[in-house]
Image (spheres, helix red, strand yellow):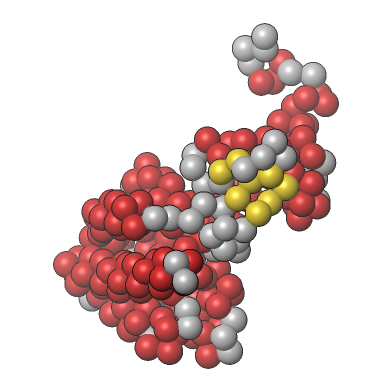
Length: 232
């Protein structure tokens, strides 16, 4: 056994690095909602998607299944799980606590540069929503949220939040088109930016919590609609 990764043969070190990179890329794709719930993935498909060999692709899949982000349905096939009502509720309750805390802690650390970044991200989100490019909106939405959470200066808290997004990310597809048409997220984000500019911790926390609650109501409704559809 190799106790120090630096003592591994060069080829094995390179493969390890490829496995880590493949894991990070797949994790980010899942968090940002690139794959919908129920989407099937094979080792070969992941390898082609990430432009790596099957070994790092398999390593990435194994790590993500251990974290609950993917579920094996066969020896070479995994699926993005569909959250049931109980799992969705538990994740949402935990998000409210952790993301609310991160937002509250972030309020005193926002700078004009941070606000410019958030406004630029929101313009990208708005444009994507207006043109019904919902996958792109989800991609930028993640960046908007975490740009705020990172301002908390609490990296372990941000890591815990990321683990929740790894579970909820694919389900965020079900927000649309209603979320785009009603502009729920846009209003919440605008209130969050205003609160950050004013260094108002309570209002920033409330804006981000409202965003989570609005999303939860839509996702819960989508789950009921899916259940009704499967019973007919």
